[in-house]
Amino acid sequence: MKKAGDMKRLLSSLAALLLLAPAACGDGDTGAGGDGPLRIGAILSLTGNYAPLGSEDKKAVELAVQQINTAGGLLGRQVELLVRDDKSQPEQSVLGFNELKGDVIAVIGSPFSNSALATIPQVDRAKIPYVSLTPADEQVNPVHPYVFVVPATSATYADRILQYYQAQKYTKVAVAHDSRSSYANAGTAGMRAKAAQYGITLVADEEFQTTTTEFSAVLNHVKAAGAQALTVWSTGAPAVAFAKQYATAGVGLPLMFTGSQASTLWLKPTGAAAEGVFVASSIAVVGDALPAGPQRTAIDELSTPFTTQYGYPPPQFAADGYTGVKLLAAAITTADSADPGKIRDAFEGLNLTTPNGTYQYSATDHAGLTADYISINTVKGGKFVATEWALSKLAK
Image 1 (cartoon, one colour):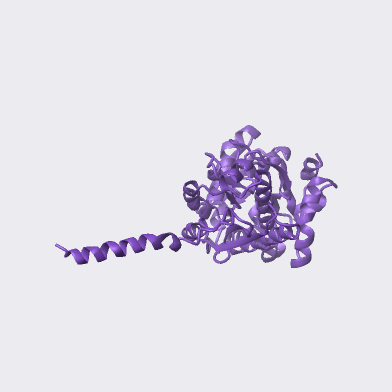
Image 2: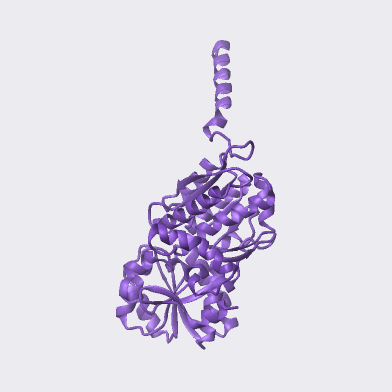
């Protein structure tokens, strides 16, 4: 048995640790009270495979925060942005969220689907608004009370692509997807689920992995399937290699990529192989094709300063990051409070026109964006150009 003196010292040590424990989790100052800055967190992929996405998000998030602060801030206070790098690894996203949660009133989440999905259980427990920059459907189906998605979901992209195929009178379509990506899996599942209602059959469903560099087997299967078009669901490097190999393989079918390729980060390395390829994207990517009005104005508020500062138009990821900040700012303003619960409640009634389109969140819809705000584009002269079909839709 321990001596009384030893036990007394042990209890004193435990008491001291308990007193110190809260400080180990952060200073606990979210900026919700007082007149100091409002602290907002951002978890972005700044290194690793998804750095091309996260780096563009960061530029646009910082631009939006700068514009808000220049205009007087939120609730009469400046906004302070705390950034964490998830290193394109889900566990690092969870770590980043746990570092931020005691210090911020909301978090703008990772563009990497797997990171966001790994972090959402922590969001559910912490009850802090999480504005996600990735389109994985599992974030909103079922609804997580504090999670709100910015990009159109994978299923929404699938729906818009199928609308386009139906208009082109295609009845047989092939799909290839990265089986390691939640985004790609969800998009493919969306096409499987909705193809029949558009009179379309998926005649080939090919899988590859994020590390795949050789696609000859996939292309041979697609050629043999009798498809009239091919849709590829992928993020990062595989899409560049796929497009280049497709261009030399003589498949002879229209090739469609999704919003993850709606960027110069895909266009430039793909080079001449990108010409004639179709890419579905947010309308923000082809904003110059829209008529004057509130939607065009919302896009110009991003595209003009972004292009001036960086020398190229904002890609899909930049539109997502900028829109995420605008949506969060609108929810804070509507709530007239920095309380996370009140901000969450304000999100569910939000109706806001942004570069990505007009969002209408509700208690049952935390995606908020319909397929009407997705454009089907083709690459011409190294640029994304809205198809005639898309122009006819966007004019409405």
